[in-house]
Length: 101
Image 1 (cartoon, one colour):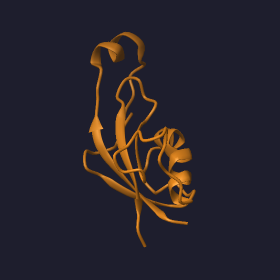
Image 2 (image 1 turned 120 degrees about the vertical axis):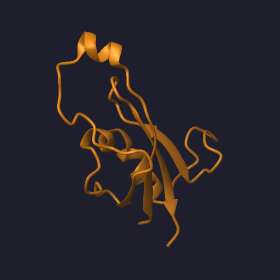
Image 3 (image 1 turned 90 degrees about the vertical axis):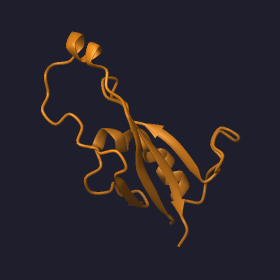
Image 4 (image 1 turned 180 degrees about the horizontal axis):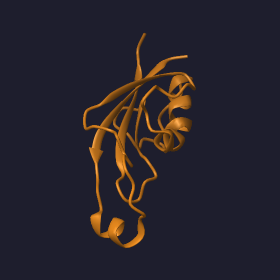
């Protein structure tokens, strides 16, 4: 299996939605802009948010297995994907890229 580099590209925050709907949380998201993780096959990299991993893991597994070109040309680099976690209050966008050995 190939390794997949996971880079935190963008982080959003919607305080209006948080104030209206979210219960207060400490450390709801500990990701940092530019942070990099490397997935080795199906294993979640240490420190990567479980919720984010659940959103991206099918794409990571596909890339690690040699797949790509999701949705018929969605990405300029067919061996990559831009995936966001499922946190509607503070979404994080991750760039997934196949790493050549």
